Figure 1: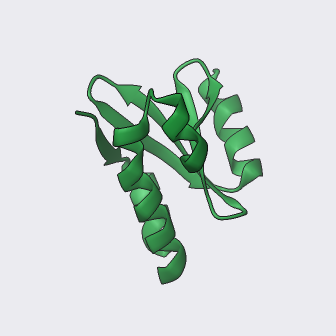
Figure 2: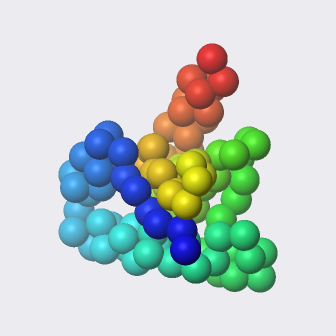
Figure 3: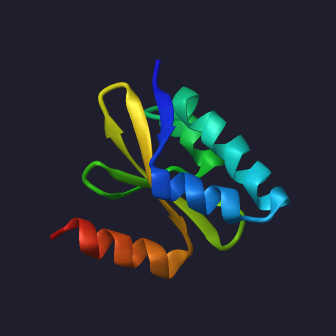
Length: 94
């Protein structure tokens, strides 16, 4: 069984969000382990591979959660908007 782990920066970002947005993200995060690797379940959650080994889900219209798989953990590394995702991907390639 896969487990969700939040990096310190992702946890800080999550905690700084408005309560309703936090709850929306937490609900989506709880659903990832059961649907990861099962494309038919991905559709409702919107899991998308951004680059090899890097994934995102959407939380609402503007917010995205980026994560990687490390063994039996899905590590959330970044929570932000579309521009934040682009910058995160660019920095991860270095």
